[in-house]
Amino acid sequence: MKIELASQEICLADNRPLRIEQARGQRITCTAGTLWITETGIACDIFLAAGETHEVQTNGLLLVESVGNGRMLL
Image (cartoon, rainbow, N blue to C red; front, side):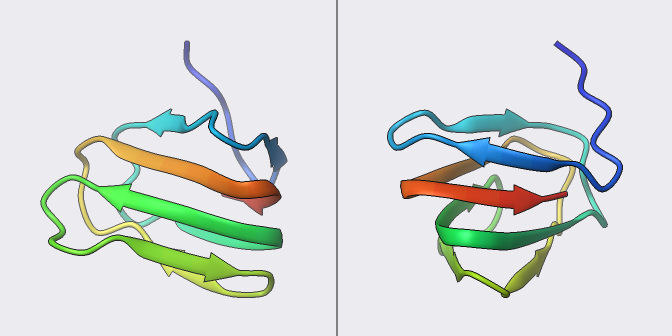
C-alpha cells in the first residue's frame, strides 16, 4: 500500500507497527503519546515523546510503533 503522508496526522494503536520505506529526509513528529522507531541501518532505537521530532536517515525499512496509543505527523 502506498500512502501519501504530506502533513497528515496518523493515529497508531498499541502493538500495531507502521511499516514505512523510502522515507529518507522525512520528519516524524510525535503529537501524542510515545513513539518507538526502529530504522534499518541505525544501531539504536529512537523513542519520541509528544512534541519531539526525528529525521529519517535511511531509505530502508522504518518501523514506527506506539507505546499505548499515540499520534504522529510525517
